[in-house]
Image 1 (cartoon, protein in one colour):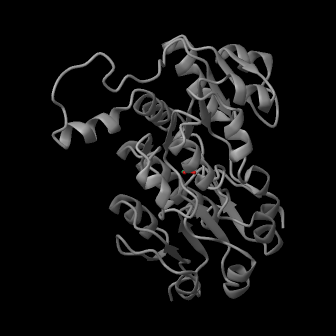
Image 2 (cartoon, helix red, strand yellow; image 1 turned 30 degrees about the horizontal axis):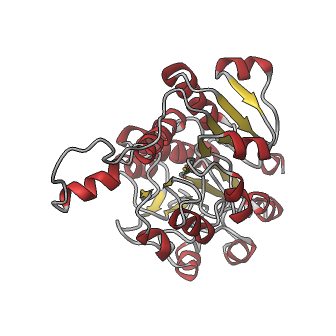
Length: 328
Ligand code: GLV
């Protein structure tokens, strides 16, 4: 008789991750390109002890009530705002995420998006591809300076600090930040960052980078009122989560040049993008790829798999979010 637990991989992952999981579990996979609706997900989860999710699968009280055999949800993402963690804890279901392995790669991308936005890389490429380049001119796609300008960071966890180190040590940028809690003096010194209140951050930053987790408290942390406090020459970069920025308010501010430019990797209601953002020229748009190198996405998927194996086989998950469940 087969005693192996059954699990679902809710979004396609690399074959070696499937192989690893098949050594321990009966594995149901999801074909590439398929995203289950909430009802389909519940159906697929029947009889499953574990599931490997991405940030796109919502795990809430209704799903948990409909899937009583579920014991662990392993998110292939560091962010876990798709989890109702209190509901999971109440149901005795462990949640895990995929921190650390993506920190430096995501910080690299924050910088890539900052530089592409400030220096108008994609806007100028569209112009060139459209055959509009007729002559060199002094102000052609003149953008904003990056080196030496002031970088503001909202949210100063591991990724924020990795970006601050790049900015301070590589680009000679004064770094200011705002966060729920102030860093220790040692950490502040390591990334040469100075704590300021949110109003000062908005007013002083030449480039404002968002790296905070999404929650009810951070919903529309950047809306019309906050955009109005920023410099008209400033750029805004969001690599955190959709919903932290009010995308409609941002599109209006960009169109009216109340800020200079934005770089967005995440969107409210993604993969849909607010139609107004698609029509303004001064925004760089990327499809939630900040952690997307093959090496890092592979490390994230293996960490999610290791959490499933660690918990269901050995009773020791690697990165538990609600370890209180383990004591129960
Ligand atoms: C990606 O957005 C993540 O949270 O890992």
